[in-house]
Image (cartoon, rainbow, N blue to C red; front, side, top):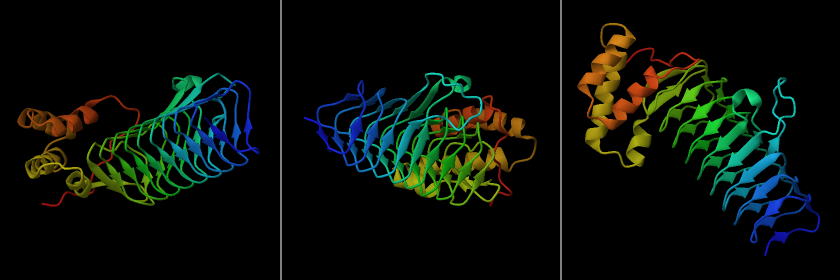
Amino acid sequence: MSKIHASAVVEKGAKIADDVEIGPFCHIGANVELARGVKLESHVVIGGHTRIGENTHIWPFACLGQQPQDLKFRGEKSRLEIGKNNRIREYVTMNLGTEGGGMLTKIGNDGLFMSNVHIAHDCRVGDNVIMAVSATLAGHVEVGDFAVLGGLTAVHQFVKIGHHAMIGGMSGIENDVIPYGNAFGERAWLNGLNLVGLKRRGFEKEQINTLRNAFKAIFANEGNLSDRVEAAKNEYKNSGPVMEIIEFITKDSSRALCQPKKVEA
């Protein structure tokens, strides 16, 4: 049976699973759905058409499913979907989607969103993502699985961050960051590959060496980028991770590609 504190407000129509815990002074809107095992500490506010998946734990003063901070929003019945096993810390904000972005903001599973994180309208965040303190996503940003965003990072609208990418703290991300990439800087540049993350996640030494060689071929060899990408596509066609990078680079995007200042030999 759900454990709901006497001071919490749960509006009529909200769907609350049997074993949900709702702490003091929380406010749950009429169109909210909380799946099994969800736990809300005190002072959590959840509104809009929002669904939160199993075993997600939300700390005080998080504010989820509120109106987007977008002047084009006209009250459309957009949604926020948050997956299972997420940890959402103090003062996190995640907004609803908008008509211009598919009506949906979507968060995957097993993420850690530290205090003061902001995820704006129409973002798509994958599984096992870590966003450190005060990292922020503008509207329509895509973040791949296992990406890590350092503290105080700000990501420009419509940017795509590939899976397994690492963004250093206090970075401004204006352009797309390749899968497995490591980006850093006030106006971020690509600083090689996320080698530490690859090792931690069990990538084999041969895979990592192939990725390093392909990175140099794509970003350091002679010729323009499209020629280098085409050459790497032929040379590394049997490497799944390299082909993921190439597919990312060649896919249409409204943002430019984050590139290195230089590549070490």
